[in-house]
Length: 308
Ligand code: CP
Image (tube, rainbow, N blue to C red; front, side):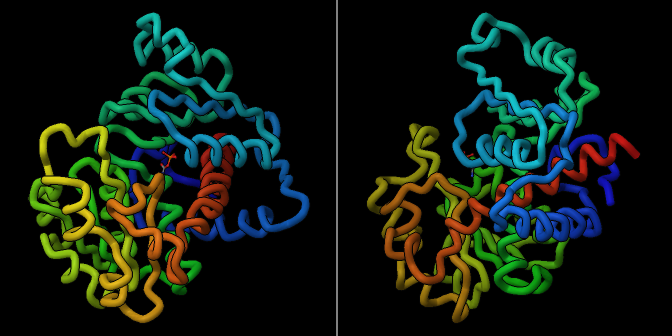
Protein backbone atom coordinates (compact mmCIF):
# COMPACT_ATOMS: atom_id res chain seq x y z
CA UNK A 1 0.00 0.00 0.00
CA UNK A 2 1.92 3.03 -1.29
CA UNK A 3 1.96 5.40 -4.24
CA UNK A 4 4.49 4.97 -7.03
CA UNK A 5 5.56 8.64 -7.19
CA UNK A 6 7.02 11.04 -4.62
CA UNK A 7 4.42 13.73 -5.39
CA UNK A 8 0.75 14.09 -6.31
CA UNK A 9 0.79 16.86 -8.91
CA UNK A 10 -2.31 15.94 -10.89
CA UNK A 11 -4.60 13.05 -11.84
CA UNK A 12 -3.64 13.04 -15.52
CA UNK A 13 -1.77 9.78 -16.04
CA UNK A 14 -2.43 8.36 -12.55
CA UNK A 15 -3.50 4.74 -13.06
CA UNK A 16 -6.89 3.45 -11.92
CA UNK A 17 -5.16 1.09 -9.46
CA UNK A 18 -3.62 4.06 -7.58
CA UNK A 19 -6.84 6.06 -7.56
CA UNK A 20 -8.63 2.98 -6.16
CA UNK A 21 -5.93 2.60 -3.54
CA UNK A 22 -6.44 6.19 -2.38
CA UNK A 23 -10.24 5.84 -2.33
CA UNK A 24 -10.11 2.52 -0.44
CA UNK A 25 -7.69 3.97 2.12
CA UNK A 26 -9.97 7.01 2.53
CA UNK A 27 -12.82 4.62 3.42
CA UNK A 28 -10.77 3.39 6.38
CA UNK A 29 -9.88 6.97 7.33
CA UNK A 30 -13.55 7.92 7.28
CA UNK A 31 -14.24 5.28 9.95
CA UNK A 32 -11.61 6.97 12.15
CA UNK A 33 -13.16 10.39 11.44
CA UNK A 34 -16.60 9.14 12.48
CA UNK A 35 -15.29 7.81 15.81
CA UNK A 36 -15.16 9.72 19.09
CA UNK A 37 -11.37 9.51 19.15
CA UNK A 38 -10.05 10.99 15.89
CA UNK A 39 -6.46 9.95 16.52
CA UNK A 40 -4.05 7.71 14.63
CA UNK A 41 -0.25 7.53 14.94
CA UNK A 42 0.36 7.32 11.17
CA UNK A 43 2.10 10.71 10.84
CA UNK A 44 4.01 10.66 14.12
CA UNK A 45 7.40 12.31 13.57
CA UNK A 46 6.28 13.86 10.25
CA UNK A 47 5.99 17.54 9.42
CA UNK A 48 3.32 18.71 7.01
CA UNK A 49 3.42 22.25 5.58
CA UNK A 50 0.52 23.92 3.79
CA UNK A 51 1.91 26.61 1.48
CA UNK A 52 -0.89 28.77 0.12
CA UNK A 53 -0.37 31.62 -2.35
CA UNK A 54 -4.16 31.84 -2.88
CA UNK A 55 -7.09 31.86 -0.48
CA UNK A 56 -8.68 28.65 0.76
CA UNK A 57 -11.00 27.43 3.49
CA UNK A 58 -11.71 23.76 2.75
CA UNK A 59 -8.47 22.52 1.26
CA UNK A 60 -6.07 24.18 3.69
CA UNK A 61 -8.02 23.39 6.82
CA UNK A 62 -8.78 19.81 5.84
CA UNK A 63 -5.08 19.11 5.23
CA UNK A 64 -4.24 20.72 8.57
CA UNK A 65 -6.89 18.71 10.41
CA UNK A 66 -5.88 15.50 8.61
CA UNK A 67 -2.26 16.02 9.69
CA UNK A 68 -3.23 16.67 13.30
CA UNK A 69 -5.66 13.73 13.54
CA UNK A 70 -2.79 11.50 12.41
CA UNK A 71 -0.28 12.80 14.93
CA UNK A 72 1.83 14.90 12.56
CA UNK A 73 3.20 18.39 13.06
CA UNK A 74 1.24 20.80 10.85
CA UNK A 75 2.24 24.36 9.97
CA UNK A 76 0.95 26.87 7.46
CA UNK A 77 2.64 29.49 5.29
CA UNK A 78 0.57 32.05 3.39
CA UNK A 79 2.08 34.27 0.73
CA UNK A 80 0.87 37.41 2.47
CA UNK A 81 2.76 37.88 5.72
CA UNK A 82 5.70 35.72 4.58
CA UNK A 83 8.94 36.62 2.81
CA UNK A 84 7.13 36.06 -0.50
CA UNK A 85 5.78 39.57 0.09
CA UNK A 86 9.44 40.75 0.12
CA UNK A 87 10.01 39.16 -3.28
CA UNK A 88 11.43 35.74 -2.38
CA UNK A 89 11.10 33.38 -5.34
CA UNK A 90 9.08 30.17 -5.31
CA UNK A 91 12.23 28.04 -5.63
CA UNK A 92 14.03 29.84 -2.78
CA UNK A 93 10.89 29.56 -0.66
CA UNK A 94 10.63 25.85 -1.45
CA UNK A 95 14.28 25.22 -0.56
CA UNK A 96 13.89 27.13 2.70
CA UNK A 97 10.81 25.10 3.64
CA UNK A 98 12.60 21.87 2.76
CA UNK A 99 15.39 22.82 5.16
CA UNK A 100 12.77 23.34 7.85
CA UNK A 101 12.45 19.53 7.73
CA UNK A 102 9.10 19.11 6.06
CA UNK A 103 8.02 15.68 4.87
CA UNK A 104 5.05 16.86 2.79
CA UNK A 105 4.40 20.30 1.27
CA UNK A 106 0.94 21.15 0.02
CA UNK A 107 1.01 24.01 -2.47
CA UNK A 108 -1.73 26.22 -3.90
CA UNK A 109 -0.53 28.76 -6.45
CA UNK A 110 -2.05 30.90 -9.18
CA UNK A 111 0.59 29.75 -11.67
CA UNK A 112 -0.01 26.58 -13.64
CA UNK A 113 2.92 24.24 -13.02
CA UNK A 114 4.07 25.82 -9.73
CA UNK A 115 3.82 22.51 -7.75
CA UNK A 116 5.74 20.70 -10.52
CA UNK A 117 8.53 23.28 -10.23
CA UNK A 118 8.56 23.04 -6.43
CA UNK A 119 8.70 19.23 -6.57
CA UNK A 120 11.92 19.38 -8.60
CA UNK A 121 13.67 21.39 -5.88
CA UNK A 122 12.65 19.65 -2.65
CA UNK A 123 13.08 16.26 -1.01
CA UNK A 124 9.61 16.50 0.53
CA UNK A 125 6.57 15.08 -1.23
CA UNK A 126 4.56 17.83 -2.92
CA UNK A 127 0.77 17.76 -3.20
CA UNK A 128 -0.91 20.10 -5.65
CA UNK A 129 -3.73 21.94 -3.85
CA UNK A 130 -4.67 23.83 -7.03
CA UNK A 131 -2.39 25.39 -9.66
CA UNK A 132 -3.73 28.09 -11.97
CA UNK A 133 -6.33 26.62 -14.28
CA UNK A 134 -4.55 23.27 -14.46
CA UNK A 135 -5.48 20.76 -11.73
CA UNK A 136 -6.86 20.36 -8.22
CA UNK A 137 -6.37 16.62 -7.79
CA UNK A 138 -7.42 16.25 -4.15
CA UNK A 139 -10.77 17.91 -4.92
CA UNK A 140 -11.44 15.41 -7.72
CA UNK A 141 -10.42 12.54 -5.44
CA UNK A 142 -12.89 13.63 -2.77
CA UNK A 143 -15.54 14.08 -5.47
CA UNK A 144 -14.93 10.52 -6.72
CA UNK A 145 -14.92 9.21 -3.15
CA UNK A 146 -18.33 10.82 -2.60
CA UNK A 147 -19.71 9.33 -5.84
CA UNK A 148 -18.41 5.87 -4.92
CA UNK A 149 -19.77 6.12 -1.38
CA UNK A 150 -23.23 7.26 -2.49
CA UNK A 151 -23.68 5.37 -5.75
CA UNK A 152 -21.60 2.24 -5.13
CA UNK A 153 -18.95 2.83 -7.81
CA UNK A 154 -17.67 5.20 -10.50
CA UNK A 155 -17.41 3.10 -13.66
CA UNK A 156 -20.33 3.72 -16.03
CA UNK A 157 -21.61 6.85 -14.28
CA UNK A 158 -22.79 9.81 -16.41
CA UNK A 159 -21.31 12.92 -14.81
CA UNK A 160 -22.46 16.37 -15.99
CA UNK A 161 -20.08 19.19 -15.03
CA UNK A 162 -21.71 22.59 -15.51
CA UNK A 163 -20.19 26.06 -15.22
CA UNK A 164 -16.96 27.97 -15.75
CA UNK A 165 -14.94 25.11 -17.26
CA UNK A 166 -12.32 27.42 -18.80
CA UNK A 167 -11.03 28.65 -15.44
CA UNK A 168 -11.67 25.45 -13.47
CA UNK A 169 -8.85 23.24 -12.25
CA UNK A 170 -11.53 21.11 -10.53
CA UNK A 171 -13.04 20.38 -13.97
CA UNK A 172 -9.74 19.18 -15.40
CA UNK A 173 -8.81 16.94 -12.47
CA UNK A 174 -12.29 15.42 -12.52
CA UNK A 175 -12.02 14.83 -16.26
CA UNK A 176 -8.75 12.90 -15.91
CA UNK A 177 -9.80 11.00 -12.79
CA UNK A 178 -13.34 10.13 -13.81
CA UNK A 179 -12.46 8.97 -17.33
CA UNK A 180 -9.63 6.81 -15.94
CA UNK A 181 -12.16 5.23 -13.57
CA UNK A 182 -14.60 4.52 -16.44
CA UNK A 183 -17.16 7.32 -16.02
CA UNK A 184 -18.56 9.40 -18.89
CA UNK A 185 -18.07 13.16 -18.50
CA UNK A 186 -20.14 15.89 -20.18
CA UNK A 187 -19.17 19.56 -19.77
CA UNK A 188 -21.80 22.28 -20.25
CA UNK A 189 -21.13 26.03 -20.30
CA UNK A 190 -21.50 29.10 -22.49
CA UNK A 191 -19.07 28.84 -25.43
CA UNK A 192 -16.88 31.56 -23.88
CA UNK A 193 -16.33 29.35 -20.81
CA UNK A 194 -15.90 26.05 -22.65
CA UNK A 195 -12.41 25.34 -24.05
CA UNK A 196 -12.89 23.46 -27.36
CA UNK A 197 -9.75 21.33 -26.86
CA UNK A 198 -11.54 19.38 -24.12
CA UNK A 199 -13.62 17.61 -26.78
CA UNK A 200 -10.43 15.78 -27.79
CA UNK A 201 -9.93 14.51 -24.23
CA UNK A 202 -12.59 11.81 -24.30
CA UNK A 203 -15.53 13.84 -22.98
CA UNK A 204 -18.65 15.45 -24.44
CA UNK A 205 -19.04 19.23 -24.53
CA UNK A 206 -22.29 21.13 -25.05
CA UNK A 207 -23.67 24.65 -24.71
CA UNK A 208 -27.01 23.23 -23.53
CA UNK A 209 -27.18 22.48 -19.82
CA UNK A 210 -30.45 20.55 -20.20
CA UNK A 211 -28.75 18.13 -22.64
CA UNK A 212 -25.86 17.58 -20.23
CA UNK A 213 -28.05 17.06 -17.18
CA UNK A 214 -30.63 14.77 -18.85
CA UNK A 215 -30.06 11.23 -17.54
CA UNK A 216 -27.01 12.22 -15.49
CA UNK A 217 -26.14 10.23 -12.36
CA UNK A 218 -24.19 13.20 -10.98
CA UNK A 219 -24.60 16.92 -11.66
CA UNK A 220 -21.63 19.00 -10.54
CA UNK A 221 -21.83 22.78 -10.54
CA UNK A 222 -18.66 24.83 -10.93
CA UNK A 223 -18.09 28.20 -9.36
CA UNK A 224 -18.34 31.16 -11.68
CA UNK A 225 -15.03 32.82 -10.98
CA UNK A 226 -16.40 36.35 -10.76
CA UNK A 227 -12.90 37.70 -10.10
CA UNK A 228 -11.97 36.61 -13.64
CA UNK A 229 -15.08 37.92 -15.41
CA UNK A 230 -13.91 41.38 -16.45
CA UNK A 231 -13.66 40.22 -20.06
CA UNK A 232 -17.42 40.03 -20.59
CA UNK A 233 -17.55 36.24 -20.92
CA UNK A 234 -21.30 36.29 -20.25
CA UNK A 235 -23.78 39.20 -20.26
CA UNK A 236 -25.05 39.36 -16.66
CA UNK A 237 -25.13 37.17 -13.57
CA UNK A 238 -28.94 37.05 -13.80
CA UNK A 239 -28.84 35.80 -17.40
CA UNK A 240 -26.14 33.30 -16.50
CA UNK A 241 -28.39 31.84 -13.81
CA UNK A 242 -31.36 31.70 -16.18
CA UNK A 243 -29.55 29.85 -18.96
CA UNK A 244 -26.81 27.91 -17.14
CA UNK A 245 -27.72 27.82 -13.44
CA UNK A 246 -28.60 24.59 -11.63
CA UNK A 247 -32.28 25.04 -10.79
CA UNK A 248 -34.80 22.49 -9.45
CA UNK A 249 -36.33 22.25 -12.97
CA UNK A 250 -32.97 21.33 -14.48
CA UNK A 251 -32.07 18.85 -11.73
CA UNK A 252 -35.45 17.15 -12.37
CA UNK A 253 -34.10 16.15 -15.82
CA UNK A 254 -31.34 14.04 -14.24
CA UNK A 255 -31.80 10.41 -13.18
CA UNK A 256 -33.94 9.80 -10.11
CA UNK A 257 -31.66 10.07 -7.09
CA UNK A 258 -28.89 11.84 -9.00
CA UNK A 259 -26.30 13.53 -6.81
CA UNK A 260 -25.84 17.30 -6.81
CA UNK A 261 -22.25 18.32 -6.12
CA UNK A 262 -20.24 21.54 -5.97
CA UNK A 263 -16.61 21.98 -4.86
CA UNK A 264 -17.37 25.24 -3.05
CA UNK A 265 -17.32 28.09 -2.42
CA UNK A 266 -20.73 28.57 -4.07
CA UNK A 267 -22.25 31.66 -5.64
CA UNK A 268 -25.84 31.01 -4.61
CA UNK A 269 -28.32 32.29 -7.18
CA UNK A 270 -25.65 32.32 -9.89
CA UNK A 271 -24.38 28.83 -10.82
CA UNK A 272 -26.69 27.09 -8.34
CA UNK A 273 -29.96 28.00 -6.65
CA UNK A 274 -30.27 27.63 -2.89
CA UNK A 275 -33.15 25.19 -3.41
CA UNK A 276 -30.75 22.87 -5.22
CA UNK A 277 -27.71 23.50 -3.00
CA UNK A 278 -29.74 22.73 0.13
CA UNK A 279 -32.04 20.16 -1.49
CA UNK A 280 -32.41 16.44 -0.82
CA UNK A 281 -30.07 15.43 -3.63
CA UNK A 282 -27.24 17.70 -2.54
CA UNK A 283 -24.11 16.05 -1.12
CA UNK A 284 -22.14 19.30 -0.95
CA UNK A 285 -21.72 19.18 2.84
CA UNK A 286 -20.62 15.54 2.67
CA UNK A 287 -17.99 16.46 0.07
CA UNK A 288 -16.38 18.71 2.68
CA UNK A 289 -16.20 15.93 5.30
CA UNK A 290 -14.94 13.45 2.73
CA UNK A 291 -12.16 15.90 1.89
CA UNK A 292 -10.61 15.27 5.29
CA UNK A 293 -10.76 11.47 4.85
CA UNK A 294 -9.22 11.63 1.36
CA UNK A 295 -6.43 13.95 2.52
CA UNK A 296 -5.70 11.68 5.49
CA UNK A 297 -5.40 8.79 3.03
CA UNK A 298 -3.03 10.71 0.76
CA UNK A 299 -0.77 11.84 3.59
CA UNK A 300 -0.66 8.26 4.87
CA UNK A 301 0.17 6.77 1.46
CA UNK A 302 2.77 9.40 0.52
CA UNK A 303 4.66 9.30 3.83
CA UNK A 304 4.47 5.51 3.93
CA UNK A 305 6.23 5.52 0.59
CA UNK A 306 9.16 7.34 2.24
CA UNK A 307 9.73 4.56 4.76
CA UNK A 308 9.54 1.60 2.36
N1 CP B 1 -12.97 23.49 -3.17
C1 CP B 1 -11.94 24.24 -2.71
O1 CP B 1 -10.81 24.13 -3.16
O2 CP B 1 -12.29 25.10 -1.70
P1 CP B 1 -11.29 26.11 -0.98
O3 CP B 1 -10.89 27.14 -2.00
O4 CP B 1 -12.09 26.68 0.16
O5 CP B 1 -10.09 25.32 -0.52
